Structure formats: structure tokens, C-alpha cells
Image 1 (cartoon, rainbow, N blue to C red):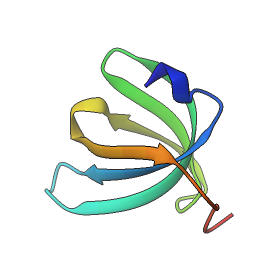
Image 2: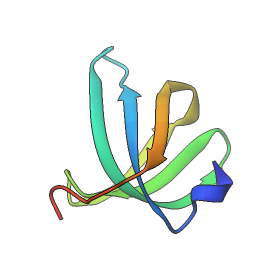
Image 3: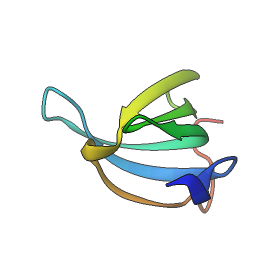
Amino acid sequence: MEKFIGKVVQLIYIDRKREVSIRNVRVISVKGGQLKAYCYQALAIRIFNLDRIVDVEIARRIEGA
């Protein structure tokens, strides 16, 4: 995940309520099993648990930005 720091990626994420979301985020840091990123959907910084990320890839376009 460290290779994505500073890049905009698309995450498929399962939250603690077991709901799946697809989010475009700019990765700020990765440490302690967590990814800190600016989320373009929430328009805020969010923390994502690495073990709940199903897939990640470089975003082709930023929706919500």
C-alpha cells in the first residue's frame, strides 16, 4: 500500500457494518494497519482499516472532486 502514497486510488471497502462502498481517495499515509486518505465522496480525511480493503487500483478519473 505504501506505493500508493500521494496517488488517487479507487478502493473497494467493507465497513464495520459489512456494507460495501467504492471510494476514490488520495492516500496520505499507511501505518499501523490503517490507510489515511482524503476521501472525495466525503470531502474529508478518512481512516480505512487495511484488512477491510477488498481491492485497490489507480483511479482513472476522480468522481466527486
